[in-house]
Image (cartoon, rainbow, N blue to C red; front, top):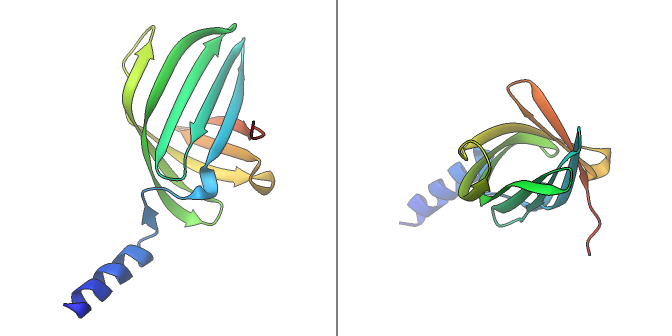
Length: 125
């Protein structure tokens, strides 16, 4: 039985996949231009929430879970799965992003289908 648990632990440690970790955790904000901003809170336990504003009016709120697969200590893949959503148009869908932390962890770049959003880490309140 001990060998089974050791093998399971070894597989988990060597795959690079995790539910989440603290590397991308924090409060983030992206200024998208044309009066659009996205704020996002990411927790180290695999939760996230976001709010999209257009000219200071809320156009989308989402909340959910994410999984993280690392390719290095500052890059990898995040998969955001919405569990709650309020939006004017469209439907909330799972999103897979390549991520990269830059500037000592104060900048988070999320890239989906060639489009990159740049988030700045916000100070803790």
